[in-house]
Length: 181
Ligand code: IMP
Ligand code: MG
Image 1 (cartoon, protein in one colour):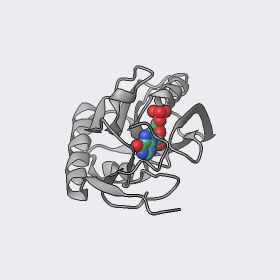
Image 2 (cartoon, rainbow, N blue to C red):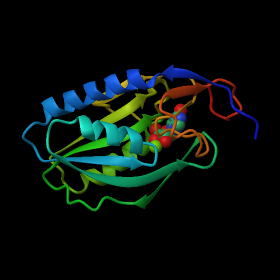
Image 3 (spheres, protein in one colour):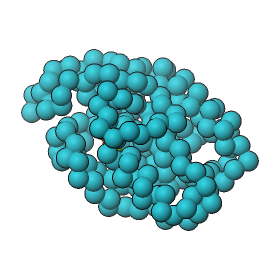
Image 4 (cartoon, rainbow, N blue to C red):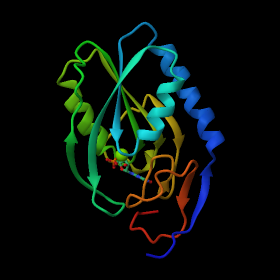
């Protein structure tokens, strides 16, 4: 495959500052509560690791593994859950930690599933919010960056499993991918 052209969108310094601000906001809102972070694998693994270490409140961490994409970049709309949480969330404050909210289909699916287990509350924390792409209304309580164009990679986000471990966030310039710009 030929090299994809990509340009930097958020540097690791900018990301770091923003993640700390999100952690501060969550710490303020949920102080004294029983908090469970639910990370969505794989995309949120780096974001969650940084966010969790900036939180000033005690919390536990769990993960789900959800996928809606095939190997390309357009959501299939079919969500598969191949790993569920193992924590009892009844009566606890859940914060879903997601990399990107795009159509909202994945979040709506997860929220509905978690609601059935009677948590005290569910909040959504997303590193990137692509509101212009929304097909389902989803309230994002903590959004890192609003992106209004293109497919982004790095800091956990992949294109076909590539680029996840880049420390900065990039937008793929050349539309070699099938994602609508
Ligand atoms: P949704 O169900 O359409 O909201 O899709 C959300 C999922 O699609 C995210 O968790 C990402 O894994 C993936 N996704 C959406 N847009 C991008 C992008 O620009 N880069 C990388 N992954 C993306
Ligand atoms: Mg994801």
